[in-house]
Image 1 (tube, rainbow, N blue to C red):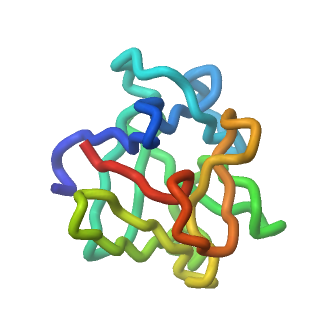
Image 2 (tube, rainbow, N blue to C red):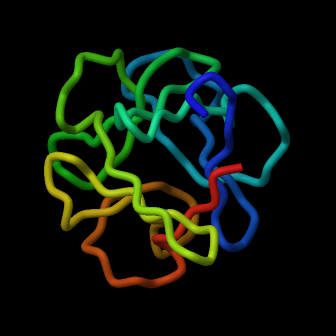
Length: 129
């Protein structure tokens, strides 16, 4: 799975997108309608625990505030590593390695990716396609 480009899809069918197709460190991970661009594709390795942008070759990273998700050069930080929990329904919970009580989530206004405490709600369940 690590060698194939994948999308991270919300229950509504939107995907994680690197804002503005940026290749810069600190660019936000947002939620956007799927258009097939490389800024919406990621190399995902569930065993190693990383999510790397196909377009920028940067890792999805939790900012130091432990809320915002951006891309940055991969440096093996615990904030760049993820624990993937596959559910029987085909969805995946993606936990932050540094604090596994926090999971990759969609913000309330459905436009950004963030970390939030796990509540089993749909905005915390992803399809990896």
